[in-house]
Amino acid sequence: MAATSFKKVSAEYRKHLPDLSIPRFTISKQQDAYEYSKAFQTEKIPPWLYKLTQAWETLYQEPFKGVTVDGNIIPNLFKKQDEGVDIKSIVGAAENVLTKLSSEQKQQLSYPVDAREWRAWSNPEFLLRPFGLRLEEVSEDIAQSILNVLKATFSPQGYEKAIAAMRINHFLGELCEVPKIMNKYSYNFLLFGTPSPTEPWGWSLYGHHLCLNVFLVGPQIVISPTFTGAEPNIIDEGEFSGTQILHTEGNLGLRLMQSLSDTQKQKATIFKGMYDPAMNPTGDLTKDRWNKDDQRHLCGAFRDNRVVPYEGVVVDKFTPEQKQLVLDIAEQFLLYLPDSARGLRKDLIRSHFDDTHFCWIGGHTDNDAYYFRIQSPVIILEFDHHSGVFLTNTEPAKFHTHTLVRTPNGGDYGSVFRKTREKL
Figure 1 (cartoon, one colour):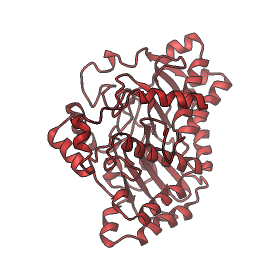
Figure 2 (cartoon, rainbow, N blue to C red):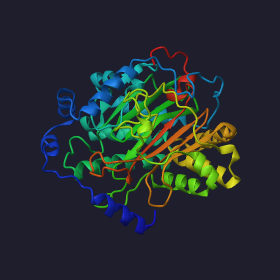
Figure 3 (cartoon, helix red, strand yellow):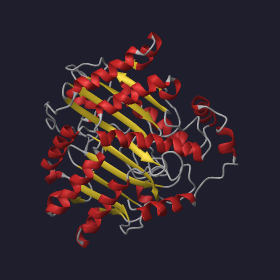
């Protein structure tokens, strides 16, 4: 993003800084993450979010199946393969964490490889399910060793993306004067199974605007679901000033949309406005396509079994340049994957272009906020600009972004590569 654009984003979001003298902030600044969550669940404020968390609880109890287009899993889409993952380094980093823990901490951290807790992640700042170890509650040495697991697992660019999301969360906590609720370490880390160079295992990390699920079996890796977001999506002061995130994905999506013919744009656009009553006709938080928290994205927390029909235009009809843009977008969404694995994943996406759809909500000028989705039998990528949660903008804005990656048809959490998945 050019310097002028950075200044523009900074100026725009700073128009919407919250009034910190209101009770929401004067009370919450005195609370830690547990007190804050308890108050939310006791007082049920805001009521719309409390109702959503109750809907999440219902969805969490469902046995895992996977996201589909019609309720039916398409079999044999994913194969076991050597993806060139440096599994020994990842195992070593995870084992190093374990050497630093007390027996109680090890027990708190560790879950069976097929535990339901894989699916317990959520992206709001409320700590609804305090599983695993929370980074802010352990020593700096242990916290850094956990971050080294991320570093060993991800591509260098993917690791920097994750760290940027955590730093921006810290920055938001400073802006709102609630550092006990939102900081760079307000994330929970869980270990599933026993770190092994040959047997299935994995880990997850979740908290506000960053939720990562990593499954490993030998030199093969699955990183999904992932949720990466930011409000605002830049840091414009302090130690990490200049940090920015999720602009490239958005700009590539907009470039793709703008490159379409008028006929294609019309077909790709499933709703012209970012808010449309047709998105929420019944108010059913488990089925309707819009709610105040998820807004337009469909595959967020606890939507592991959602039916998401194809919408928009088929990618196979695109020009070679437009198809490359689809792969460039996938590159950014899949940046956490090590380079070799990411290349193979993009090859798989390309092989399904005849059944890949691109859809859009909102306008498509340079100044518009928007939503887009790329969806095929093997990938779902969602990008959405949101209205304010801590900032005060009532309309979606380009400085608050949510992105999601799902592997449909049972691919999330590496489920298709497990020996058993009854508990999921």
